Length: 240
Image (cartoon, one colour):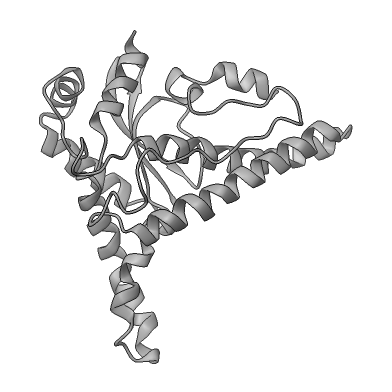
C-alpha cells in the first residue's frame, strides 16, 4: 500500500517523503538547512528547536511505529484501524519536511521574491503579490483548530490556488508550492514572555484575547523567511 501511495505523490512531495522498502527501513528526522536561531526575529530559536526536534520527531516516531505494526499484523481489521495513525503521522512528516525547506534566513534568500515564473504566476492568478499574501493569510487564519495553509498548483486548471487542510492532512489535490503550519506549536511560545506579569486569574482571559492576534502576527512575519526560490523550484517541477 505504501509503495502505491508513494508513486501517487506529486513530485514536490515525493522528493521529501520516501516510503520504506521494508518494515526495517525507518523514516528519520531531516536536518534543517539552517541553524535554529537563523530565522529570528521572525521565528524564535526556542520555537524552531521545539517544533523540529520534538514535534516533527514525534510524527516520525509515530509513522515508523504505525508502518511496522501494519507490516507485522495479518489482521485486515487491524490494518484498517492503523489508517488514521498512518495518515496523521505520515502527513505530519510530509508536511514538516516540506515546511523546513519552505523557510530561509532573512539574511539569505528569506522573503525575497525575485522576478521570474513564480512571481509572474502569482500576479496572474491573484493580481499582485500583496493581494496574494492578504488572501492567503485570511484563509489560513480562518482555519478552525489546527491545520495548514497552502499555495498549491492545480494541474486541472494550470493555476495557483489557496487551499487549507485540517490537522496534518497532506495536500493531495494540488502540488504544494508554499505551505504554512498553523498548528499552535508553530507560534504559541511567542506569548510566553507576555505571561510573566499577569495575575493567575487573568491568564485564561489573556490567552483567549491574544490567541488570534498571535496567529495574525505569525502569518504576517513568516513572509520575511519564506524561501521563494524553493517555491519556484516546486512550481517548475509541477509544470514540467
